[in-house]
Length: 79
Image (tube, rainbow, N blue to C red; front, side, top):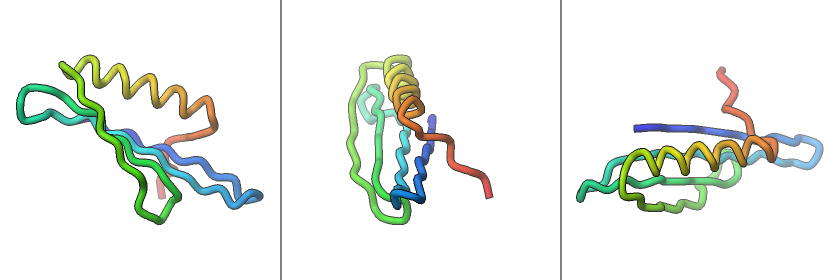
């Protein structure tokens, strides 16, 4: 199972957003890319996309993560 957690902060604009993705197997041999996004500290919006195999799901996850990083999202800072 793959997991990516990204955050974007802009204190001057009160911007504190997160975007996370999971790739998980389904019951019938398919794979899903589960995405959740929203404001840090609150429940986010979720979406699940289905793929025929793990390779396709991981490729979609990589593409989305790259696009989010271009928009200013970064891996969650460690504490």
